[in-house]
View 1 (cartoon, one colour):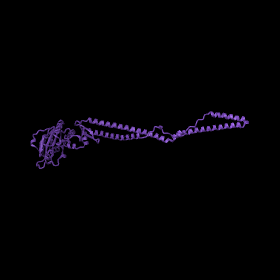
View 2 (cartoon, helix red, strand yellow):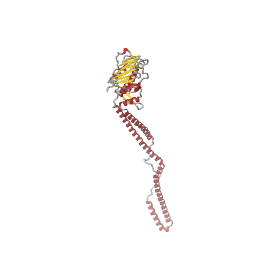
View 3 (tube, helix red, strand yellow):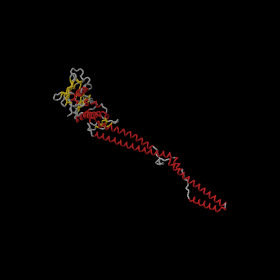
Length: 427
């Protein structure tokens, strides 16, 4: 259905208002002006109470000193007439056919924040963003993506710390290039040493046998010289010994092998094996470091993928205002961004424009919004804001401490100033 707007309003004896009747502009900005404590805000409070229900009932609804009861009557563009009058200001809602109804029919098209925009303005940045996200229907989905991103980021961060530690540990570990790849076995070295000693023993015995043969030959020669009469026997023995010696001399005897190298290896066994173990530990540390670096990159890719989904989700959402989007604040929570600026960096009028756009999206059937206290904005800003509201097809009823030409009407002592009754709306 078409958005509902306020076509006319009458208030009598409501708070500071004695009697005010006006017809707001259907689109754009209707400014109620006047000095302080003249009844401007009382007009808005009356509208809020009439449409919002008993929770918005003013503490002192009745105008002080008034003899008649307070009365509020609003006429809406959908044909409804909303009244509150009598001692208890009971609600009465009448449709175009004369049928009576109650608060529920109003709640169906009136957005609470349109009646109470300061409530939205006072929200935290997080809550403002959540309101918009829920309005767009992607709040839960975006919150899930944000949670996944935080979890992946935290896991990646933890892996990054471990990866850096392992990389540093690997780089600082000693590495030895002057040792074998495998651990050296002491038993193998001892066995090799024993083999060499065994061979050396055989050679020593061979040298002993050679020495014995040489002495035997010498004894035989002496015997030949000493006993010429036994020459034949001695010659025979000499010939035998000489033959035996010739055979012994013909068999080469190798020089003794040295065990010094093996002994050196045995002496350096622990040092060598320590180096081998150190190299193995460093290789393992490198594997651990590489594995952490790979996992860190995988988690980085996961974070970027989630962020891509988030960007795609936001880019596909129809924002209520051009150049409005959802970013993240320093605490990694969602926040509103308008023209690239966070809420606290927006101008006051930009904040109003963003707030009104979001509130309108919450309930499109509500075609109006109430704005109290626009005196902070100059006339040029008000004119731009009014043009923007008109372009959006929105009705805004606002108050301003002023009696200048920018005001649609001016209230003085609870009633409209007579000279303002015929003044046209500047906006």
